[in-house]
Image (cartoon, rainbow, N blue to C red):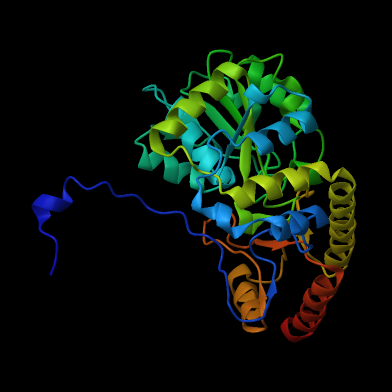
Length: 356
């Protein structure tokens, strides 16, 4: 039975975010920027020590064990940390909490596509200043009146990292607006903007456990900011759901944060593989941005992006592709293990022979 028109007119509709495919069959999965290596050993130890009988109890609504571990890791106060169910949860609550003026929120035209979804869902006005021809954010586009600013650093899917001088310039020109720097990939790039939090009371920095800490399946994200802004986030969170983080996520997340040596070794391996991939792809004629992430944003001047994406998928190699006019010739390729990347290169070598 179709829903009557009178009902539909008052139902909120939105064009949803389209996540990367999660194939169930065995493939080379380079499409969702997951970490190819397991989490820190302490994570398994914590999982093994969990008593299933405790699952009858609600988790700590303040997420104390994880908040404490993050605060110690970054050298900030516990009341400067907010945690949520992945950075998507954290960012969604940030949109709802901080972007409430009638002025448009600003974010790039080519960026994480969930920003536009949240703006539409919460009926927040927004504008998308275009990236320049090299896919870089034009800082002067953010020197105007606005209802808030958000951008990833490194940006996604372009992988370009901007230094702290760039971030601070945006902050200086927007002292009366909340500025959110989404650092999902910063551990693969350079210095975090967290060091600017004590200087700018309008800055919120978000990060995730899904990339550098190998815990996408556990869903852990967090924000670091001034105590006043974190308190506002918690007020909104408690208005929705006090118990957002599971007991397992809290203790496993804390264990991952404490193992600094494993974290740094993991990052090092991925960056080394990324640099080798750049050299290999360059030798095959591909062009790409200077990636500061755990993925590469690539195109080949002689190949059609959609066709290459389809052929890769048929061969069991999954990468990410969009039909957006400006980037439809590009593929986003997650940095996998050395073995996975070699399979990709083997395919591309054969593809070069068949296409030329």
